Structure formats: C-alpha cells, structure tokens
Length: 350
Ligand code: GLU
Picture (cartoon, rainbow, N blue to C red):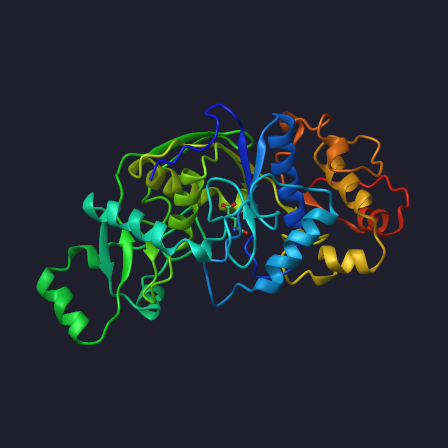
C-alpha cells in the first residue's frame, strides 16, 4: 500500500477530471493552475480519470476531456491516453502508479477499506436517502450532504442483523478522530476543521457497492505519491476528510491550494449547464486555445497585457501569490474579448 515508485522530493501534481461531461472554462481554469504550479516547480503531472460513479461517467467524455486538455496545450507524464509502456488495458496508460482510471481500482480500494475496518473506523449505515434528508440541516461547512448524526454507529450487532434480514442494504461510513484537522492552504490560508464540522461520519462506500469520492481520492493521491493538490475552492470542505483518511492509511499529506472559482456575469459558478462555455463549443466557434489560455493567465495575474498565450509559454510568469483570492466573474466584455479578441478594460473580479 506504500508503493514509492517515484523520486521522493519531486513535485507530483495532478489533474483529476470526472468524465461526467465536457470540460468548461471553469475546469480549464482549475486544471491550468494545477498544471502551471507543478510545471513551474519542475514537477510531474499525473492525469487521473475519476470515473468512480458508473451511473454518471462515460468513456466518450473521458476521451473528449483528454483531447480538450491537449488542445489547450496541457500535457501529462503519467496516466491514461499516453503510449503504453506495457500497463495494458483498453486505454493505454503510462506510469508506475497505475491504474490511473478509478473504475479499474476496485481491488485497491477494497484493501484500503479492510485497513480502515481493522482500525475500527468503519460501520454499516442503513439510513435511506429519505431518512438522511429528514435529518435536516444544522449548519455545516459543506453542501455535499446533510450532517450525519451517527445514528447507525450506535446499532448493536443484533440490530444490524435484523436490518439486513429485513432487506436493508448498508453503506459504509467512516468515523474518524475527533481532533481538528489543520492545514495551510496556499490560497485560502490557515484552515482548521473537525470532521464533525465537515458533515460528521461520511460514506466511504455506497450501499450499491460504489466507492465514495472521498476514499477514492485519498487512496489515489496517497498511492500515486501526489504531493501538490491544486483544485477549486468548492472542494475545500472535503480536504479534512481526505487528510484524515490519508493519515490512517499511512500516506504523506500533500500541500493544498484551493483556487477561486470562475463565475458567469451573474456571479453563478460555471458548471456543465453553461454549455456555451464548454471548451468544445468555444472551439467550434473558432476561438483559438491561445486566447482561452491568455484570458485565464490574465485572471491568474500572470498575463497583465492580456495577450494570447500558450500554456507552456505562461509557466514562468505564473505566481501562486498573484492568484485572486476571490471568485472571478466573466462579464460580457471579457466574453467578447474571448470570442472576438476585442479589447476590453472591464474589471474582472467580483
Ligand atoms: N474529480 C473531481 C472533479 O472533477 C476533482 C477531485 C479533486 O480534485 O480532488 O470535480
């Protein structure tokens, strides 16, 4: 569980897309920042396809995402979509830390679950979605689900057996240490949360057997030797949970940078429904990748004259300390510049 097939002090950053749709400008922004941070440090980029949810993931999106990343000028050193060095599988991949596609990692996640089980951190939870929804909302730092009050943690073996016999299927929940988890975020500053603040005991395996996001990400970051995580600030509330899992599984903790989000003119964060801002749509409109990169580099504080640029050409100018601290709004003037290259003096930040 502790393969270290990589040099110990090398920076290892990652791009971890979920192939549940086409990449939009907001994804491109977070991925470019992760790519610049690793490349600037002379580090490696690992591409990992987070297709853990079979109901939402599609191979077609995985292929499109890899094509869009390349179109924007991002490359990677390990992962799928690279000429195979013998790792095999339907999608060739390269690197010593594979598989790099989560749907192929069931045995690895099962081993991690066994280890957590042996540590006494897991219990079966029989609550249905409806019951969970009814456990209405004390405030918490996350929007990933209602805070869980630990109902099923207190069940006796006999009660568990009775629920199983009644046909209830159990998810597996993680009950971690109660001490606060502290970390310094390179963009958001010092952070300190208890797991209770982050929604309480969380699922590591769904009742249909699908491994939950938190476990898959922690195990993969750990076993792939990822030591630099750059991702959207919306994922920050997951970080204490992932750190708790990484610690218990005996992995090093990466450095974290949770970057601001890109929003539309109304201040709503870009999402898959913003179809017109999918990289594919922009490309079909004839927008060159250099203009997209130029705009995103400008928002990152690395391209003050807002010139068209390549990803590699902006690596040296990228400064993590110049990143905006607040979410960036793409107003009409900026979108005009993106589409038509028209000059614009509009303010970018909220
Ligand atoms: N796969 C996640 C997403 O596309 C990102 C997970 C992460 O960076 O930890 O939102």
